[in-house]
Length: 478
Ligand code: NAD
Image 1 (cartoon, rainbow, N blue to C red):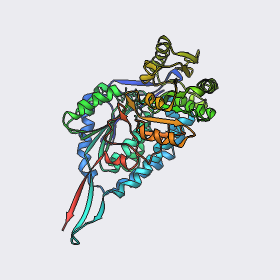
Image 2 (cartoon, rainbow, N blue to C red; image 1 turned 135 degrees about the vertical axis):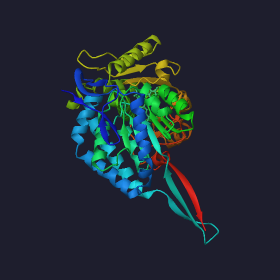
Image 3 (tube, protein in one colour; image 1 turned 60 degrees about the horizontal axis):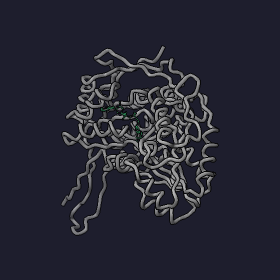
Image 4 (cartoon, rainbow, N blue to C red; image 1 turned 30 degrees about the vertical axis):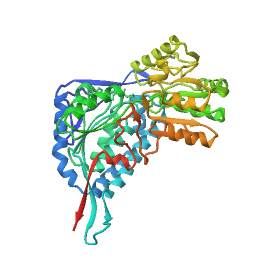
């Protein structure tokens, strides 16, 4: 019997007024239903927004240390349930046990991190002239934060929005992704158990076009933080800015790794393969383009094909090298790009076929002879497909790396310090890595992109993660 889950509104687990539900299934075993969720509509969403609005003043007035205590306690409760959370994440989303376990740990760490920040907002500054003037800043919440999140990091991304929003004194309405909402319910349960007052956090599941767009457009929502595709993000932006809401967008990527002729090719192949094929390529920061100096090109292609061919597939609970795609449509989309790339004239060096087994499995694919104009080199695939693009020098490598609409994460593998420094200066990306894979983030430093990957104005995570959810006043008290 699958879990029958409800919305969380005003501190109560509540059915949708539509009485309709949707199911989540195991991507490794699609006949297995994991849970059912309310197929909510605009009315359900409005009720959740009202609950958040009503709870707003009291939560804003709750002292920071008390808010922090609740976040930290929720983090500890989640910590006691890591295996349960990891299993739910694996079963709904398809990650391997190691990948899902790492993500769950990240969510726990985020709750502890922002829990400790909650008591630390605002500050005192010495006046430059008047000795009798006390100069200080206060930091105030915005009100109701509307959060819309994707399926590919179904616990870490909601955590890195919920925790700073609550730490800063905002109330929250969140719409988790429909493919894997379960872990957000677990977070709500932990916060409830930790003593979060009713209405401070509200969770509503249902279609993005109904629940998500109601959040984006509702007049009682003061700020919207969205992570997902660039197409949907742009719609959310247009709706949310109509009445002047503050908006944060984190969207797609087409992340490059440049491989210099000075690179150790074996090390470069490890870095690129990990970045391209980890989490089945379903990361916004996944390495989807390797831009490789012609002198080491053939050797690199062979080495990266070896890595791809060595990956084993299986159910995430058995912790294989690669789990399935999250859904049939994501699998179809990857297979379609494999065809498009071949039609465009790229050479399929390895993989790209659906596996002949239950579940949405695909072999990782490596393409050579890719030109920067090709769709494979320009569009986000969101699957384990790597385009290897030859270049004749470092100038061309930087040009090609920047020759896309996106600008999220980028890395370079080089043994040359001057090249590394040039890369930092000239690359158009919000996350810049030297001799590291494009994926993987630390929680205490800002995260965000450039160009079509982000709204650019507000970063997430670290101290910067709090800025989006706050407004400051500077007080001159004479
Ligand atoms: P998506 O854009 O399809 O959906 C994201 C969320 O928006 C979901 O909750 C969805 O239900 C909701 N939504 C859909 N239509 C809506 C509408 N009209 N109004 C309001 N909300 C709506 O993205 P996805 O398929 O869930 O996730 C994959 C995408 O997310 C990829 O493009 C990936 O690059 C991106 N992503 C970006 C980051 C980042 O930090 N930059 C991180 C993870 C994923």
